[in-house]
Length: 531
Image (cartoon, rainbow, N blue to C red):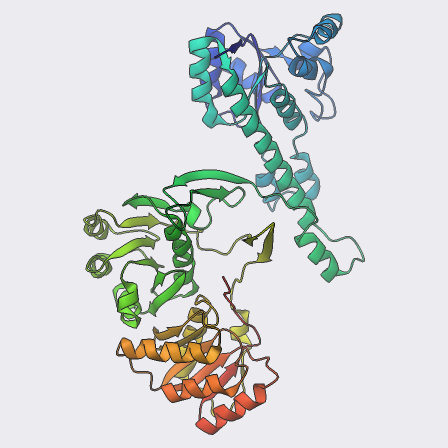
């Protein structure tokens, strides 16, 4: 495969880690090194001979360093086509030497934009102009020039230069693709910052916020994390990408300690299993099947919470995905190991718990960093020909403002049950209802076309698990459109109900609750989980 030799390289980086190792290979191959500012100083201190860009161009850095590489001798050296006679004539006439390699990474704009100590003017100064211009010029002319934009590329590039004295067409093209992806993502992050920054004086807050949060154009940058064996079904190809800008968040931030490779479906379930338990302050465990919890439990100990979650639906728990909000201890691990489980995701594992679970050869064990479960970013849903974008359904502010609307008021224990059921119900596929008592789900109805059928399904599930619903609390993720759902819950044994309200028949439902002696709370906010 053809190799373009490298005789002259321009190095200008923000991240100077490992740069000297790459520079050493360039020196070994007698490559002239051109550099700017801090990069030039770092290379000189390490013993390298460096030609300053200002000396090459004959023009000093100006405007406090804002203009350094924006010069025809730099961009001409990058953009000239070596096989074009007119380009060669222009280069000769203007004394423009060709540049064969650019190594550049960009000002850390995102870090600057998130620093509360920085003013808006300081943040704007962190927008790199010269770097993206050089990267794009080199990438455009990748037939003759190589561009390196990430420290993770250094080893492979250095090895190829050491062996061949240059880089192959295939390598230069791959590096160009990665370079354009980098600059596209960099511009996206800057555009996002400008979009969400200060409102103009006198602007209508609601309209500007709406326009600002959902701009006319939105770029989503994804980085391949791993290829998957297959998708939802074996005949579908699949891969797992991480959304750039959301590093350290969600299931993509988790580390796998043990077990076979995660599947497409495992990852979808694990994403919910990570978030759900952290909605509770007490030790909590959730068991997921097909994106819906089969059981949720909270208790003073993790093992007790796991037992409560499993008791809700032990049949469906078979082959489930388990999430928890505390380090997994030996007792909890022992309970999990006694049943077939696909995935366990936790903030950590005690040594003896890890040793016990690792005896299950295929069991996937995931560790979630502290911030992974925190709500973040937008929620994206793919539809044919487009993308739906919404805020994440985060938090439960309505718990501080819910209204008791019935003659009978919930007792203290019932209030705790209602709170637990309401939070749990958010994660059940709509139409969703959830029976609960004393920190345990007792029966859940999910995905039914009518809400009354969801109540009946939840009742039946509780009967199958031999769980008593008398005196239980019930949560409904959206309003009861008719009294029938409320009456079915009361017939099953519920003594307290929480639901958003908002139906034109709310009063009929309240009247039915009063007739049956059921306490009812309206939250004014729903948590529909449609997909």
